[in-house]
Length: 336
Image 1 (cartoon, rainbow, N blue to C red):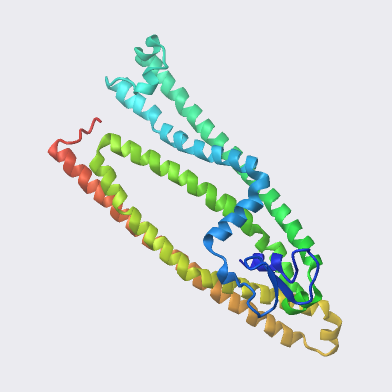
Image 2: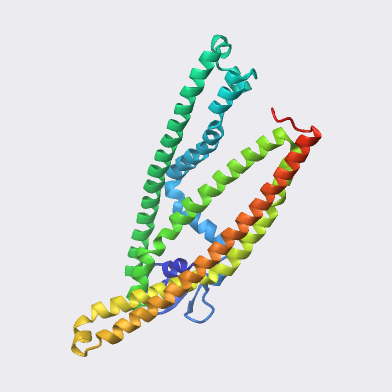
């Protein structure tokens, strides 16, 4: 959100510096700083999402291809136990092949236990090879897309910084601008790649798992879905409470960089007046503030992980209980 303020800066719609005035996109008029200028709190989540989509749109084909590669991981994961199931059920046992394999394998191979065993062994190697190939492609295109989005946005930020007014740079300081360009410029790709794509991929995997469970027993699927609202509520509560901490962490990290920039920029003056120890203490104090905030955020994230794990474990235990009770009652067969 602070990146939006930086990109807006002290400029009018024409792109020229206007002496401490800001252009308000919602009202369509110029106002001086402090006179009704929009703040970061006015940006809603949907506004941020629209901004991310707009910045990522030039790379939509790369993102789309990366999404397809991510979605392929789900059917590959479902194929992993199939070779073992063929070996145990159809080679050692007498169960027929799964329908999708029975439809594509030749009749002679499907009726030969030796052929099925060889097929299961080759399929095991082939599935692992496909999984590793998918992982390699995902890593390559994820890195490629991430670096291109970051480079494009970073170049845009740098170009915009050079056009901002002297008043803006005097008020914010060059170290803060450096921090935004070098570190916060990755916010776009993190939201586009590390949030959007995993969300769709996880939703696809979740849907596939629920479909498989429903095919086995609808009661198990219903029990598995009970914990979903709890997980959503926990995540939303955590997010609302940690936004302020992340914003404060960015401010403290920027303040630490400000100390470094000031000292190195005026190093001769610092040496001349013997202020090395004082500046070192100031740097340590600013760094300690950032360290304490990072520890607080890490503890909050660990607490979230613990709550999510316990909630998921409760759901798994409920599924296990219902499943075992159904097996005992004869509602589910162990061979199914």
